[in-house]
Image 1 (cartoon, rainbow, N blue to C red):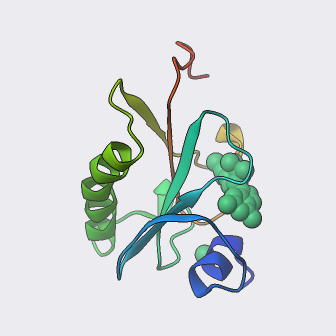
Image 2: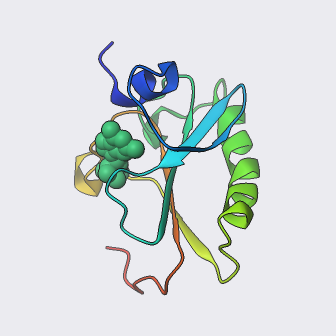
Length: 112
Ligand code: 5GP
Ligand code: ZN
């Protein structure tokens, strides 16, 4: 399967990691849209939020347990935004589940 984020998990494509454990990886977005812009992904391939189900949702809980630690390590004391684009209407460009963690400035009030 030709998946950019699976290649990052394997180490075939370099990334700037900010958190890693046996199940998940967090790394800096190559085109940051805020002073902190981190992508948090499962190491296993799930195409999008639409692919979350009872069999694989534990990894999503694990990601959301890690996000506050990542935010703390990034110094996001004033808050942050967590976003996951799913499908064409949301402009999802990489078809491997990922959560954007954005912060480090006052973010836009509008989300769409
Ligand atoms: P999406 O548009 O699917 O919600 O988010 C994909 C994100 O992946 C984009 O913010 C984009 O900048 C980021 N991205 C694309 N290619 C690479 C890459 O090779 N390395 C890193 N670190 N981020 C990437
Ligand atoms: Zn993948």
